[in-house]
Length: 97
Image 1 (cartoon, rainbow, N blue to C red):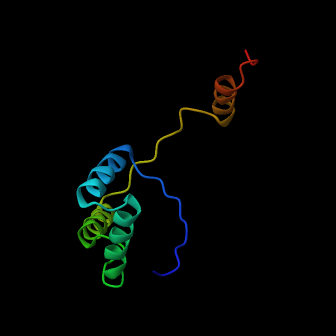
Image 2 (image 1 turned 45 degrees about the vertical axis):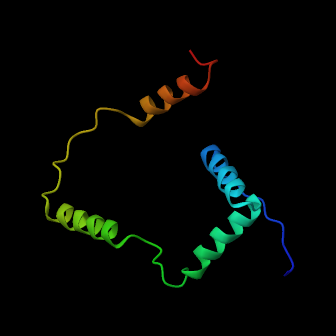
């Protein structure tokens, strides 16, 4: 057996429950199930894209559509910097009246 290196991971509660069931059903350790899943993932690592082509195409099309739209009409601000600062201080500083 090759040298093992200890790694700690976080998994969801539902994943833990399924991991326990699968390991018990197959008669192997939970670590073995994780190693097999990792090996399967790494086997295809060189061939999988890091992004979703369809999602990227939709996002790109959205950007092109936005570029074609007319600019938003400018409006005068209804607030001042001081008002925003004062409101923020009231929210975050309980000693300010």
